[in-house]
Image (cartoon, helix red, strand yellow):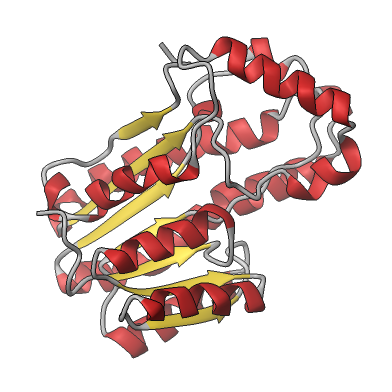
Length: 264
């Protein structure tokens, strides 16, 4: 029921972080994997991990916010494998935390462009392939910050462009589910809480956070999480396999939250 033998998975942002974990997890369960990332070396390293599990891999360099790159990604995947069974819209970025009036317009545009427009572009490009086959499965990676603001934590370092973009991903997921159910295409999303093993904040954390700020932020997250800890990246693997497999064959338009109880 949970096996992915014979399925072709396409993962965006597969060159590292959760994307790499997802690619390897899909391969472990029997899927062949295509992946795209701006980091060509990282993408190829992930492809080698996929091949180490006896599966076929295709690494593609590209930007999910570039329609030409997205079209090429889908064309190369379809040409290589003949279909796309599962699309995992994982690619995402964060920007430097700031309040609304202090947020540069460029930061807003970048977060919305990659996190929401990128999901739209990739899904839009894959849907004709899935409809042609009469089946398909879209898995979007959202966030609990797309469910609601968390003033207990966000007041320290508000990252509202990220949260707004992820709220859009949740809404887009539901629209895909409704519009394409009759075509055999399902769409669901995972909304992680604060998990270890992501690369989202690395770009600005190195230059914007001092050790004291980082410690305060981590302590705030732990304090408001009923399980009193951050999640491990490996704790998302089961959700991915469940959604990618036939075990969830009657599920569409749903948001699976993995957050240690913080949304309760």
